[in-house]
Length: 84
Image (cartoon, rainbow, N blue to C red; front, side):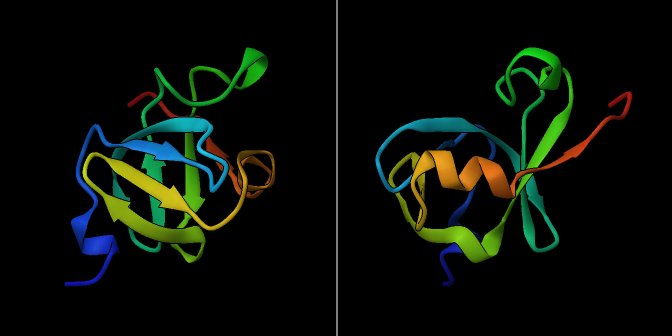
């Protein structure tokens, strides 16, 4: 089983430094889609954000660990504004 196939809805996404980045909505192609409610700050709230699976390090219990520290990982986030 690949690490990406272990990702489940509502898992916490954290950087390599252990800092919370968001909560998994689902895996969408080659990206992790984060929930709107727990994704982005300030003007970036209310949008779905996506983290590339290329940053995935491991899935451990209820956490998705990324290979980059949180400040670097969020710079890779993609944003999508949609009504869902």
